[in-house]
Length: 548
Image (tube, rainbow, N blue to C red; front, side, top):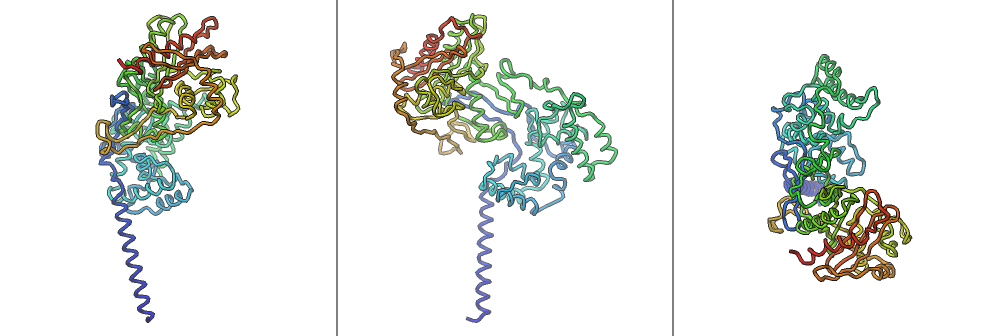
């Protein structure tokens, strides 16, 4: 075959391969999820196992989406200056940004190159930092650049970025920090708000020297002002005037926003998490759900990130059984009322045989009879020797429990009563470890829709077999038999920590494993609380065996 024909054939194959690659890349880009129609902030809703809404997790400051024309020009300029001063001047493919993305794919983070487009996608898609996530973000960035103009991308980012004090977006931030609309912020105020993009804790978290406690915040604000001047956004006079202003000038006190309202009596039966901007509102106020919702909140943040949980509109089905939870609260209230003189605290956890947390109550008694707060949390206390000869079995996998050679006298540190109940489920199941779970699934739609129609992330149950059957047999042999009022048989074991006076009772029935802890304040050595824990164990489990 003549050389010219061979070259023509190779050229034809090359053109065909390029056409196939371009077509495949185009189809891949078109298959990626489209960016949302506008930057939304929707709270997440938590439901009990029957679909009843029990709590809402959202931003603590009301959110609103604004157009760029509704924001002060200085605020738009300040945000651009912080992240990418030439962002609005460029169009098309940003070679520098994509080169940085490719370096990240090879395991070399380059945070300094992350501009507005990248930050927006990281916010709405919540990447996990692996190579696959980086590749998806790179492709999503390509598609975003094809679908939206630079001002549209900037507008979306400005409406969803977290800027401290529970404020997502510039509208909420202007109200949270200065009590004014985003259209009215001054140059100095705009620079300060923009400086919070990378450190959104602000002056409320500043811990400087006694003579200049706002130095860090002032340096961050002035850095924004200087960048704005260098890129022609400010005159030299505006720069000098802005830098002369003290940082806290005009800033609204945090207390006015409810930042100090934590724990009992907080607005909407909730508590502001000042470090992350999440605000929990209990939708059912009479079931002592704070401990259960708090645990679900922590699990969700670990899995999805705080921004997705607070703003992403997740619908989360938990394992909480509200009727059983209410019955447990009533039992705890009655028990603490009878011990009012001791000022006792109590914790109760009930797990079903799948390891799901059905009941989680944390209550603080008061010296006055009848005055019981079932929403207050308890500090962690040592478990003591409740596990006895099974300490080397359960202690090896309980949080911070120590090593595999823990003896019966070792003081184990239990994270909470749910972990203690899970530890005893090892014996109840004959050696199968089931990690306690409170979140069953998370979805973008409420649980009322049929499962096939939902985009659902169902959380798997972790089950493993635990060795040392001899120790498990020893633990089962040390359990006491008891009969609930309904006639259901149960096995249980009581114990008292010699170090703190905490009284424990843990055990199981055919369907459930439970743990109870009662603590007197101050510890009372002369009163045996172990029988009281057994009574509370029976009172909590009885309605579950035979619901009313």
